[in-house]
Length: 293
Length: 248
Image (cartoon, rainbow over all chains, first blue to last red; front, side):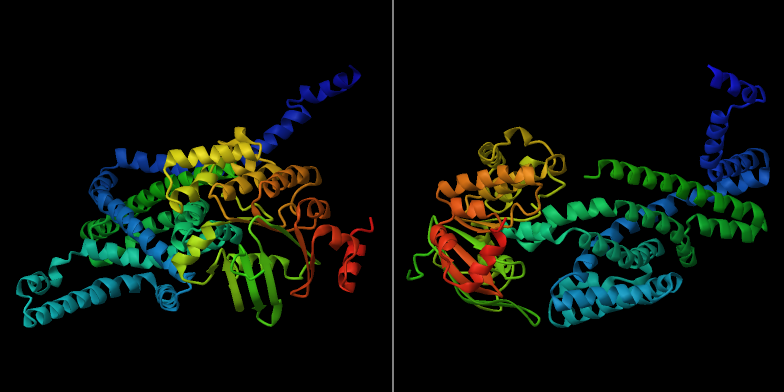
């Protein structure tokens, strides 16, 4: 009783010690950065709805969203395939397979992404098409006339820049994802492979049914983060004149001289997508920690 | 023993890890239905010997014969041989992403090509045998160590192995769980399954073994039936080892 009586005067000043600490903890842990983002979002929303210039910029740039999103999703799906195969190659006992995989990974990692995109889209793919043409010519000489036709008639101008951009992005990211897959596979205790092999499973079966399901579950957050990175890096394909949001914003700004409008809208579009995706990844991580066995 | 009728026959098996001689010329025969317990100080090559039987470790030289067939590295043949040799590990090595039932049915389905239904029936029967039929739908981490090891035994038995290998199956268990696992193993021994067991459990060795093999420095020092082995060991190194482990 007496303790509460002594506590009474403090409360009369406003807050008790206990609730002051509670407020302090709330202050400390409140996601102020997110509130900042929210303010930014509201600001941009207000600008878009009230300012005709911003409104115009938004409705024009918005047209590129489909290209940005589709390019990212398709390129990432292909990159996962490249990454899985290359990651398996990195840990393979086969000398050729392992060295090819390492060559690919080190090659890609040593070259800036922008340069890679130029190189793959404007050198490697045209070179590949010329190679197919030459192959077709050889087949024609060897007497496989009908089979050779598609090889000969293929022209580099038929391979559109959207496709080249996707190939360039997935080739680049395949090397990054390979390292994630490799690390994920190597994080599984050796005993798992031994148990599977001792039961008579082949290496491939053990990988498919025992190792990879566990490894992929472990690397899902890392894959999610790389998906966010790829969404941002997809802006680089604007150098190939692919009409993604970056390219459209550049064109619009150059034409109208409305640089602040175009690039603020562009930046906020990327931000909105990446922040939302980051939340998804975080939620995924949290769920995984809860399910951790 | 002429070697031809043995379930397992190891002939001058050597295994070197770089410069370390883990096995230095081992000859061992195990007859059908025999229970052989391998004991010895740590680092003496017990586990390596066991792992050479199903080529989880590939011997540097020497031959391993299992049921009249030379174990070698042709992948398909080796997988077929391994499917007939059940192995139980110190750390259980259950598949954590699968339920107990799935742990036991996976290899049956993809290695033994059994139907889903048949595999599940076999799994359930083996879970009865090791005394935890009610855990079929649990995940390994929801089980105690002793239960996990019994699932691992059921998983191996489900493939109808000719041989069961046990690599220190109770070493990672809390003391109160050792008995439940040893009881299951003792049942198997009495059921006539050919077993090779690496263990420090001398009580089990005495009760279950037909032969005890004592190893040191990558070699078999002494081999004898348990009564003889524990009462009148011939080799001085065996006597020293036994006096050290049995003094308490």
